[in-house]
Image (tube, rainbow, N blue to C red):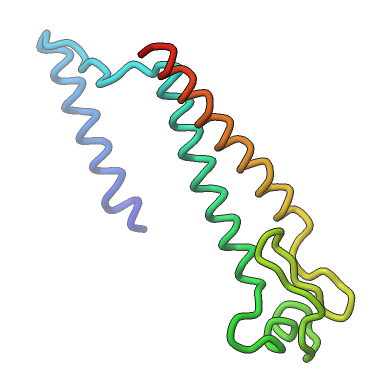
Length: 130
């Protein structure tokens, strides 16, 4: 409802103003910056760092912090203390069963390699340019 009430009229107004300016001979506005390979790599690195942080926070939501038996109760349905838990690699074992989804740790690894790789590429490009 908010989209229909606020966003769509705003978008339509901006589009209308742009079309009017183009007809009056002002031309279409030029893009602010052209995407360069270094900029794309920087965006990839930032996105990978943020996604990795969000995924790690999601994995940490499985960890026992104040009441360890509640972690197994809420996540696995058994009222016991965890057999094992660790923050990296993210793991919570209750009665011999891993509770954290299987895809969390491989996802963290892929995002970490992507983020570090993109950062290294940026550093090498900057060193060669300077």
